[in-house]
Image (cartoon, rainbow, N blue to C red):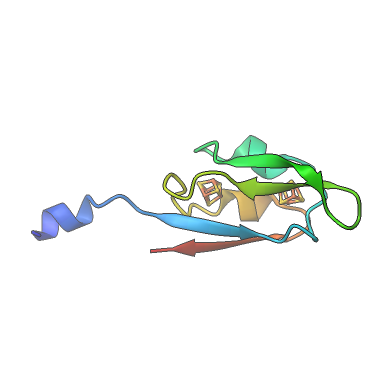
Length: 79
Ligand code: SF4
Ligand code: SF4
């Protein structure tokens, strides 16, 4: 792979959401530019529907979700 090709490689990322810390405010869902976070139908121990990542392949690791989360419930990982 040339330098140019490698610089064009799509940035991949993933996130881990702490379902027990999440309060289901949906801020991360509203702000994710890739639309890859959804709210579960299930409840956590505190009774909140929690957010989860639906498509690992599309997350870029931009970290917007983590920045807006008031509960600091999201960890971001990048390739
Ligand atoms: S890191 Fe960016 S693309 Fe990935 S889930 Fe969070 S806001 Fe969406
Ligand atoms: S912003 Fe944080 S607390 Fe709100 S739904 Fe997303 S993970 Fe849960």
